[in-house]
Structure formats: C-alpha cells, structure tokens
Image (tube, one colour):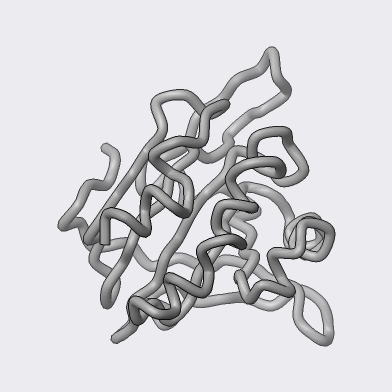
Length: 162
C-alpha cells in the first residue's frame, strides 16, 4: 500500500558517503521535530532525473529555506557512491541538497513507491515523487503517474503547494 498525506513514514536506514566512506542515516531521527522535503527519482544519472528533477530543487532550495524547511533530501534506489558522484556532477551537493541512497530499496518498497521497468533496465526502483514531511508525517505528497515526467513532483510545484 502506498503512503498518502497524513501517513507517518516508517523508520529506515539510508546511506550517504561521509569522510570515511558509507555512513548509515537513520531516517526517523533525521525527520524528528523537523520540516523536511524528500524527493525521489527512478535513477541517478538518468535523463529526466538529471535534466529536470534535480535542477528544479537546485533552483528552489533557497525558497524552501525561506519557508522553514530544514533539509531537502534527494532519494534514489542507487548505491551511496553513485549518489555522491551525481550530487557533485549536478551541483545538488553544492546547493545544499542531501543525496541519500536507499541501496536495497527497502524504504521505497515499504512506502509503496517501488516499480520495475525491465525494458529500460530499471528493476526495483522508486517512483518519481516529492513530499513535505513534518516530524515524520507526510503533509504534502506529489507522485508522478509516469516515471519519465517531472511536473507535479518538481521543486516549483511542491513549493507552490506549501
């Protein structure tokens, strides 16, 4: 079952690259008492994700800050090394966006956002979505019908909704 507005996000262990290599990130602790934007993409370095989705949050990062958002997180079912490289190559890291890996896809599956598209080589990936989460509760959720489009899940659309 997919999450919806009003849902509490489940706990999850995600990954990022720190000073000494991969580090676990406790999602529940990250969200506790905070206002966080999470946007998810089907795959790092893929077309729409790189040319539309990430850039929309780079453009709007400062406006989310102005609205009291504590952190903007980009999530993908990729490994943390890929997410680090992608964040650096797109400018997302420099813009202050946190790049997290759901390497096993466990969190993505737990919230019902997983899909597979074998002809495109995408197996067990995340649907494209963006959400505003306050203290672990989903307040706004925008999920794209097609993983190849970035309209309602883009930074500007989420910003307009909050």
